[in-house]
Figure 1: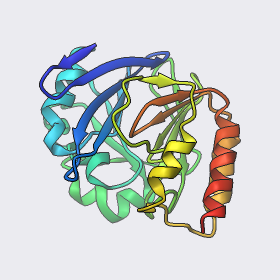
Figure 2: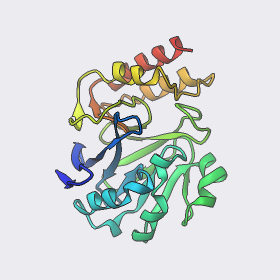
Figure 3: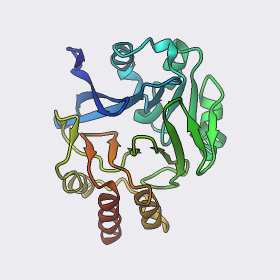
Figure 4: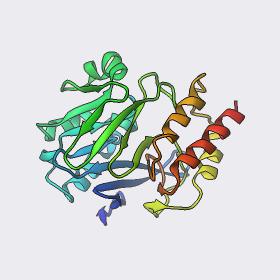
Length: 243
């Protein structure tokens, strides 16, 4: 469903109660790219990623197409970066009950200061119950980048909100695919590697694989459905081989 014909923002359900908000953009070199946010509709609705400030109007309109934005309870993101949390304070201003959700490191070094409302700082392995869904925070420092990085695993729908992992170029029209995303994402990473290549990168990716996700909610490009554990293991191999 297209919610903004000017920006091309659209909303699609990619898992039970989880909706992908997708906006295509043009990069300075003329290439296409995309930003995704994911809205979990539940008793305590949760948004993963806010998008940059410039997309606030489009993203907030997309949220309103699914629910009153004032109901938003949690605004989560992997790490501090414009496309992850650039519109955080704008969203807090229109959702009076909402609170940021981030890692404990993130709260300590950034979010506790930059956010207009105190964050819910989750410890590694801590669970957040939103109603029908239970989500688990997984610390992923420096994976793919950012000391404060972490990801959310929805254990109810086996969906991993995987942030910058599997970033795909272009602006794919398919909201959810079962086709190869590792090849395109590795080709995109090759000329401008955005991985920190920390000593624990492989172990962190294998830990994510152990969660057995069936849906990968990627921040850039299509979401993916299939054997997420196998795909994450292949990613660990590819990243190790590229060091």
